Amino acid sequence: MPSKVPHLLNSYKQFLSNCGILDFTREAAEKAADIYAQSQGKGIAIKEKDCQIAGIALVHGISKVFTRDKSDFKKILNITGLKFID
Image 1 (tube, one colour):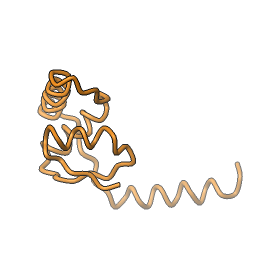
Image 2 (tube, rainbow, N blue to C red):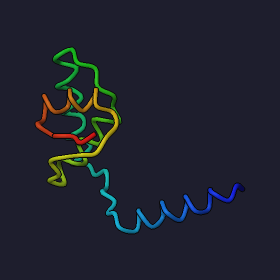
Image 3 (cartoon, rainbow, N blue to C red):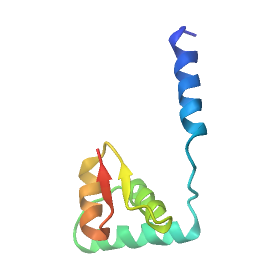
């Protein structure tokens, strides 16, 4: 194992120790399905996993998510009002 890998793993573990993990609950799944259905109804393609992330955020009262996938979250913003930070 290269010497850099353990350091990166420890840094990641330290970062995660300061983060909460939000569950993908039934309510989040229903919200994700609603977002997906609305997007499909408008002819807008959004990846299911991004709908799931948005569903989790929205049911936990989160109004902004950090993402590098701006394209789908711009579409989600138009449907839900959920903002994103790149």
